[in-house]
Length: 142
View 1 (cartoon, rainbow, N blue to C red):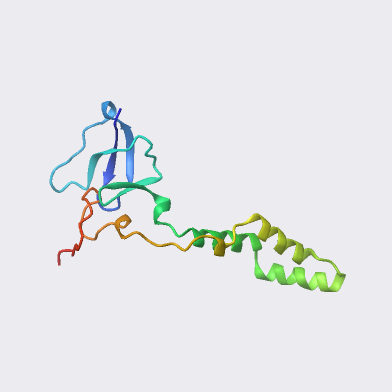
View 2: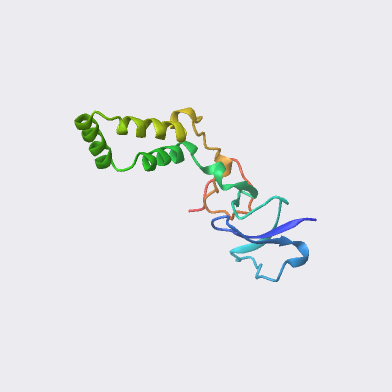
């Protein structure tokens, strides 16, 4: 059975994902900002519509950025790390070295993730609704 979602034409966000029988009436005039659209059966709220195609939000994300942030959070405050190094030098321990090894072992190295190459068709064309299909050589109205 086909799934439907209300699509926000400006940002492509999806809401009210349901079966056709569960659709309810919304304004769909020529100036409507939202519209019922058929979507794939596996569509969730983690998806959005871009240029008439439903994609997962992660298809627009640079996974390297997430890995960098994860590592920064795991390493913690630089002042705390400096304290660890000072105490290690003073006490002959390896707390800081062990901490760094633990972070490296438990998080993904950003350099090990392939470079993100954005697909222009997965970014909404300016001046068009999310449900409008991709058009080559589009220039927005002035």
